[in-house]
Length: 496
Image (cartoon, rainbow, N blue to C red):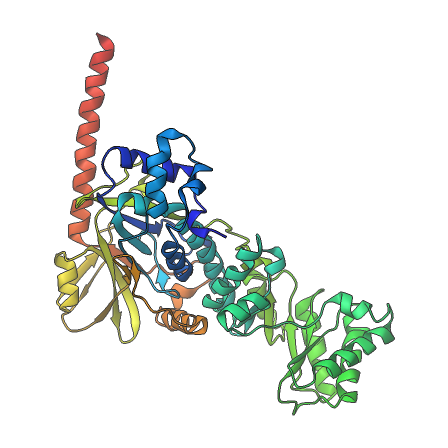
């Protein structure tokens, strides 16, 4: 599939106008960022950057005839020829996958010729919005418990690509494994899976058939982790007892090194798990684990644990795979500079007022904990102070009573947007998926516990530098003056 050209036509109609206007060499800077985090949280998990870089690298691999299919006609002949040879030759700065990102911070910054940068908008947003929705939801689900969570929502995902890369994003967001075999093969991560109810009933719709199904499964998979699905007919009156019988007759007990257990997929999971645990323990199978599934999400898991459910691990499907409560992530892609001149989008909605200019975000760290983020113009006064570990003072852009000072030498910092592509060549060396998960977990551990709450979290300090604020307000004030003068002129014209 030609991911680089999974785009909207208006990227190319705009490109044609840039081309005709002699603007194709103009240097543009675009930022990809989001304005609000899902579920009334104030942060999200970055995923999708690897696929974004791969997409950028594949740009410009089509003959002119390909473009004729969607921009036909003689007027486009020269432009189609240009597109067929157009590779991305600029620079890309991005957050690492597994980074924790806050609203308005540039997740990806594209610096390049305007047509090259413009046509990347839709495929970039397509990749990043999907994966960040899933990774952020996976983060919420895995934060609702200290038990392992497996992702197995492929059958509910919006297509094979979404299933494969959604599972990848879920691993970054904290899931221990996925049921998706393609994700496992492609990224070298654990693949989990046991049996369906159809497997049980295929041995005959009877209690004895359930037992035979369990015994055959154990014999087929001895030497592997074993999980038996016990709710096909009746969990407490036959399923759990057939599982115990099959395990014992096949020589599976507490010393089985690969691990063994049962799965609950329906009913009152809190009650059933407690009853099953009691039955298993009485049977001498104290090491038999209980795995729970059935339309779970972070709220249901939290409630199960509040009710004292005795569950060792969870499986979560569509809630993660489709980011069910917030299926549409809000990344946007905005021009912030053209040929060295800052630009912005002003809107009636205050939240849509963007930060202009070539930006970079610094994360302030004390005693291993994240304390604040400051987005600056590259090389501005605040960025120089931070890199020198000098005294800094930050205050909220929208509430001056919320402020904090950091004394010289009392903090460390890290730059969130790092070079990924330089002059069209990828310089960032990708890392294994499980290392990205480990990076996310380390970042998560660096937040305050109150900032990780599922409901009503404490808000982390996020600020912009004075230079960036002054630039933004200068542009806004100039626009307001121009709009006022233009409006007065138009009213005068209309009264003539």
